[in-house]
Image 1 (cartoon, rainbow, N blue to C red):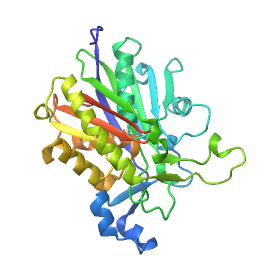
Image 2: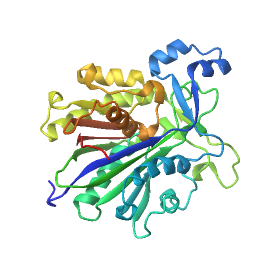
Image 3: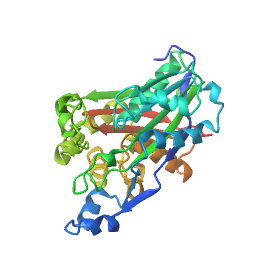
Length: 330
């Protein structure tokens, strides 16, 4: 348990979507052989947001982060965590570029976290750990990905799912411990189930001119999720001395409708406790959980002191879950 008298809490969440979107009717025009009704019934997604050719993850991240820091004293932010798998360059860290663009103080800690769908939960754990250890007081956790740049136009598995987006979460010192009871897991034997093989050292990136492309074995990723996440959720509940009845809402990574429905069924969760905003947002990778939290907050679904369970899972293969007590946002 925390020996420091302070804990951590979420004080602000914002997000940003690109201006361009593609709904299922638009997608079917270029893919008339695709059975869009069947695809929608499985994914639950009608709209995807797509960054333009010259728009990068940092561009999206800047807008989301600026919305947060405009509400807060920039000089008080002492740590910047940037979760992305769409970096600007191999080096330097994209967090350094984002620090400069946001005009954050030069004495802050800033580094990247190379994780996808589990990245937000990992980022929350690092933010709260820094605060509880006394190393930080205000952590800006930014998530941003542009997976659509990796998806081939005729990829029926990935194109109907992924959206580009960024989110920014301000995690601050609190008299109460509102973030905690984390549980994580990694299974690197499944690294090739969701992968971009092109463009790095294993593809001889020094001479390759090919556009990086994403490969996802949807069936294998689904089986991994169903075989891993229910146990991970139950572990967090047990370690935090909670039951399903104690949790007001479950915020899973917004992978797809079929994933959310099957997780709910396996865990025997009441439908009204499982939040989803996937239809008009899509799968935004590391930003899917914070975007869902923000939309639920804006809709006044979430109330102060609500007890939430967050769970992210996917590429890696990697997963993480935690308990969160909701606080009023700035």
